[in-house]
Amino acid sequence: MGTRGLLRPPILRGGLPIHADRDQDAIRWRERNRYDVSYVTSLDLHSGRLDPSRHRAWPTVTRRDLDRPEQAWLGVRYNGIGLSPRPLVVRSAEPHHLGVRSRGSTEDRPGCGAGVTRMPPPTGDDRIDDMKIMDVTRRRAVAAALAGALVATVVPGVALAAPSGAHRPDCAVGTLDPTPMRQAIAGLPTGDATSAQVRIITPDGCWTGTSGVRALRGAAPVPPHARFRVGSVTKVFTAAVTLQLVAEGRLDLDGTVQRYLPGLLPADYPPVTVRQLLNHTNGIPSPTLPGGIEWQLAHRYDRWTPEQIVRLGLRNPREFEPGTDQHYTNMGYIVAGMLIEKVTGHPYAEEVRRRIARPLGLRDTYAPGDDPRIRGPHAHGYQAVVRDGRTELVDATVWSQTFTPAAGNLISSLSDLDTFMTALFAGRVVPEPWLTEMFTLPVLADDRTGEYSAGLTAMPVGGQTLWLKTGSRYGYLAGVAATRDGRFRVEYSITATDAKSGELSRTAQAVIGAALGMLPPAAPRPTVSPGS
Image (cartoon, rainbow, N blue to C red; front, side, top):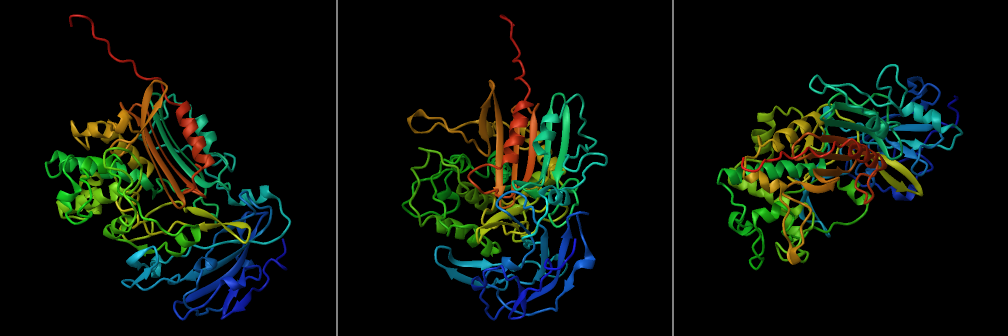
């Protein structure tokens, strides 16, 4: 495939290459940060490989504070949602600061609250060299060729799109037939998701599989034991730590936020108990932020404190009188994280590590704090963004999680989540009778029963109850589910291209559907003979 036209020189504005099909008026310059534009290259659709001989080096340029820095990133543009039948032009840039203020600086923005710190991404060896966007040019090619270029060969001898069936030594397949789950995650990457990892355990056996690619810039498969953002699955860990403190007598489930964190809530605010924080019956309002993915992208490195988030939320009216209703939000868990830090005198991350990760041997589970990266092996997450009538995938892997402390910020892996859920349900993390709180649904006004317990969600299925928790961060969907006796467990991570959408990813729906189809019948209850 020739490169004439495909590698057309970009228009230079202020020294930075910008392709002519971009909206030139959308880019403005300020005297701030520096950008190094390294090269332009192409993807050979026939071989499915990036050809290093087909690149043109551009001199290093210096410009500051790109108003929309994501225009310099590397990613992939799609024609609508599906794979585009057109060749790619890859533009690589090395952003040094991505248009944010230096560490420690603050600024006030309407609707965002004062004093929110904007964090620069890491530098040096930790620089963000993958958060970029691929532009798709108008060329004739077949979609199948492009799909082949993006799909990893996960298992030798298996078709390109087939998921891996590699098993850990402690995950024996037994007589379990994983075909439904294999089919659920086969064929990635697609416009819906770029990769998936699933682990399922039933009385018949265990299966762990992956599908898709580590990153769209190559064909490498998802790394073994890859880490990922678990989103709101974090709440299960936070609930467990909080209940441990209750068991130790350092917190009381009926104790109030006003008692433990005086001054956090307004003086006239009704009492909010620790139990109400954990089961979403607290009524504390959430913050209102400017809408739209572009605002999120522009503020992906902002550094928030829990106090700032609570103060911003309290600008809104109280949702309901505490204990009378139930509304799932992050707010109760953000406050619970503050409680943990207050009564222990240690950061939330340290308490999770000391109380859960270290005793259970969880090597991949940690709270990242201010670090926007995912340390260790991981698959990249992407977010679909519509610009100029076309859909682009922006790499969302590196993203500050400080807006969801103790509610959605943890990073983990499939094996760690399974180890944690097994120990939790067996009573080895939270002792009885306090563990019962995680399997007790609150009674609300008018004798209604809620659907959320402390950290978990109840899902009745076929005469039994699945206790589950799902989570989403930009680029990542995650979920855990188990029966109360632990005989059936499933954990998954999907790098969905619109993870925060109101409509669940099709890949996630397929995984959940396959898991429900593999759910064994409820174990028979033991019978007690009369007089025994």
